[in-house]
Every structure is written in C-alpha cells, then in structure tokens.
Length: 194
Image (cartoon, rainbow, N blue to C red; front, side, top):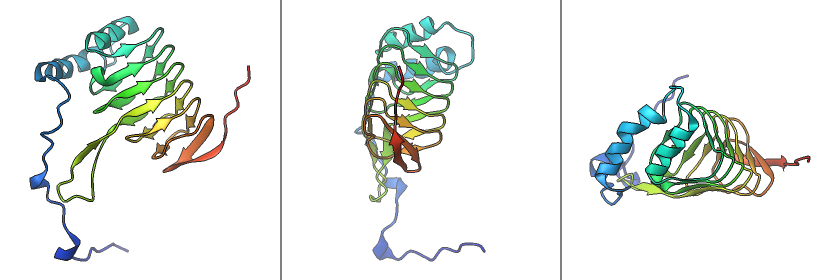
C-alpha cells in the first residue's frame, strides 16, 4: 500500500532552505581549502599505489597531527586535515570518510575499518532554516570502528570500545563496550587476551 502524505498546516512550520546560511562557518583560509580540495583526490582519496609516507607527509603539510606507523589505505577522504589528530599505530581502512568540519581526535592503536564514516556535521531539523551544526569526535586508544559504521557528531568512543559493522553511534560509547545497531546499543563487554 502506498503511503500518502497529508498537507502540513501553517501551524506546524515548514523548512525554508532559501533562508539557509552557514556564512558563520569558516574552516580556514580560502587558499588552503582550495589547495586541499585539489590535492586530496590526487594524493589521498585515490587508488594510486602511493607510499603511505607520501600520504602522511601531505596530511602533515596541511596541518594534520599524525603519530608513528599510521596506515592509510586507498580511497580515504579527509575533509580538512588541519582539524585531524591521529595517534600512533592507527589503521585507516579503504574508503573511510573523515568528514571533519570540527576537530577529530583519534588515539593510539585505533582501527577504522572499510567504509567507516566519522561525521562531525549535521543540520538542526527543528529550525526552519536547517542550520548547520558541528561537533567534534574523539576516539580513545584501542577503539575499533567496524566497516560501514558511522560515528555521529559530538560522540566520544572511550578506551577500546567497538562499534560493530554497519552500526551508528549516536551516544558516547563506554570503555571496552561492544556496540551494535542503529542506533548502536551496548551488547557486551570486550575482552582482550594477551
């Protein structure tokens, strides 16, 4: 059966995208943003067999703080490297999208699996102007973000927490918690054998 939509009364309010304005948001100097958007597809967001050291050097040149022995696989997309901090021994899998309109901090020994998305921006659907809202993301040491999972704006994933494949973190994740679903909920404790 097809869903039909009832007309909305004027009392309920309406979205008016003609009034959308995010002039307040400035991620950095225009030349830097433009230079990054030109170089990102050539050096980072591609499948050319470039050494990881070249990718790391380029990200650092654009202001990213990156630790030792970081792996950046092909097809990774990073919105603004100057809002990115990555610790030591981090794995960034294929097609990871770090949409960092706000700072993203990634601790040591973190794994971002294929197609994971760190999303720092959203829109306020309660406002008729659909205002842009940005909030930082923090992934503590040992966090694992599963393939095709999404970490929403303002989320902190605490030490060694896990977001299972295809899940969406809409709330902070407790240390050593394994979270699954959309929205992700705690399912069990993570135990790591030595």
